[in-house]
Image 1 (tube, rainbow, N blue to C red):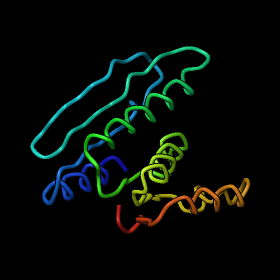
Image 2 (cartoon, one colour; image 1 turned 90 degrees about the horizontal axis):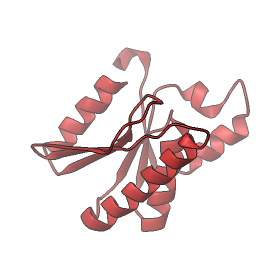
Image 3 (tube, rainbow, N blue to C red; image 1 turned 45 degrees about the horizontal axis):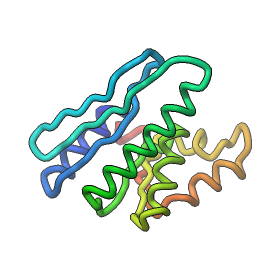
Amino acid sequence: MEKFNSSLIKGLASYDEVISLSALPYEGPAKKTVLKLDNIQYISIPNITGKLHRLFNVIMLLLFGIFTIIRKRPRFIICDAINNSPCYVSAILAKLFRIPAVAIVTDLPGMLGVNRDPAKGIRRMQQFDGYILLTEAMQ
C-alpha cells in the first residue's frame, strides 16, 4: 500500500502541489516532521504515548488538517480508507471545507465490515465523494 501511496503522490505532484498529512505508524513518541521535496510537502503529526494517545493523535491530525486547508485551499483530499482515524478526520475536513474527498480502498470486504457490521462499513463509504479501488492484480 505504501508503494502505491508514494507513486500516487509523485504522480499528482507532476501536475500540482501535493501535501501529505499523516501519522507515523508506531505508538512511540515522535515530534512533528515537515519535509519538502520538489512539489511535495510531507507533514507527520506528533505522537504521544499514554491512555489517550489515539484521541490526541486524531485531534492533532484534525488541527493540522484544518490549518493546512486554510493556508493551501486544496482541490481535493485523498485518504487511505483502511485506517479509521485519518479516514474520519478526512471526511470531517472535506465536509467542513466543502472539498471533495476520495478514499483509497485496498480491502473492500474488510472496509465494508463483511465479517463484523456491514452497515457501519457502508456508512463509512458514504462519507466520500469518490473511490480508488485497488485489486490484487494492481499490486
